[in-house]
Length: 153
Image (cartoon, rainbow, N blue to C red; front, side, top):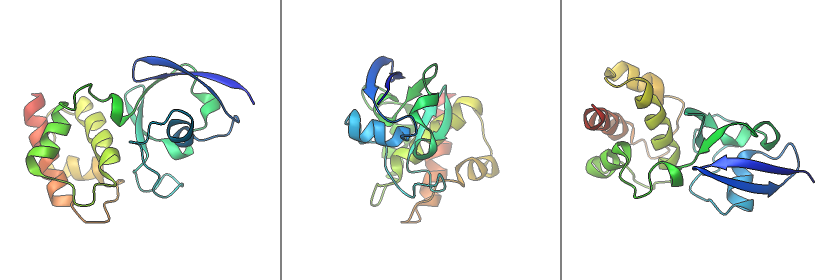
């Protein structure tokens, strides 16, 4: 199996994996970074969202072999102390019920807010619509994104 050097959360990490191994499984199984969740395996639910060069990306369909010159950020690397404005807003609004989708929701919201500092409700819904929450916490998610935007401005 080939070796890869990945740039994850500001550190270089070496892994040995088949070329077609999804980043999700490299993170979880090889690097013991389990904050990124498996949801559907077909890039439709958003539970596995990470940032690739700042863009929210589904890691379940991203092959490790194409990631050698990119910066990967996982939920563990969004902030060292859990105090990113989106994480703070999530706590303030008490968004999670079961919590399973929350890492992906937070990663999607933080990438979105990095690009759009003052989003409308419609823009928030459009940005977040690809992330499924089985507990249907969508109203709290939208409210938390608005609170996070205020914190970031």
